Picture 1 (tube, helix red, strand yellow):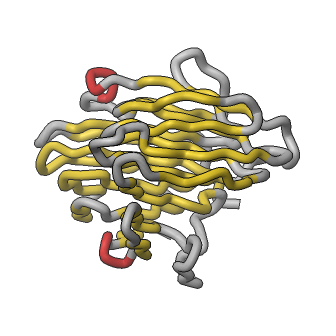
Picture 2 (cartoon, helix red, strand yellow):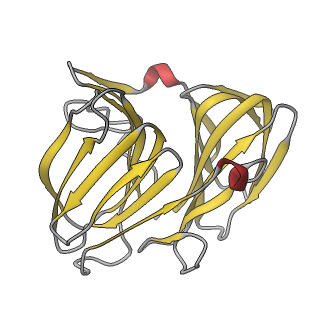
Length: 236
């Protein structure tokens, strides 16, 4: 229990002609018995896809999948009828539920696409698949942890079939934010997209993460302009 810092260099890696991916947890050809997930959080992939390339049609089931576009554009199609192009600042949520087949491609023929994809176990299995996406501006995220996906319905965020939530913040140098967990049974996974922060005195740099367990609230202070994702999640 407490705060465990996970350096970026400890992440797994996939590197092929069209894809550069870093894996916070075991995924695909990367297997690390000590990094199988954190509570209900199972996957956090940091992906850069070359222009015009992407992931062809492939199946998922019984997983809540959140995709956050950091740079460029990503086109999505799925068998539930979902289809859209996500641009920088856009967030997509998909409940795979009973089963869905989808594809994801870099929408641009000229520029790479950089995005995070996160998988969370749902609180109930075999639900009807569904898909939604929403745009979140930089000004909305400025010096706060903006709720982008929540386990309760809100017109201002996307809804996932699991307790907790995703919070995205763009923090100026010298600013400090405090996050208080919704429930004692939750933990938090903090991923630093870029910049440098301190979490209760512990330093993180780009690509580092912190697993937080058994702490009701914690502070994030930016040492330089920083982009931060906080995932609050049930631990059991």
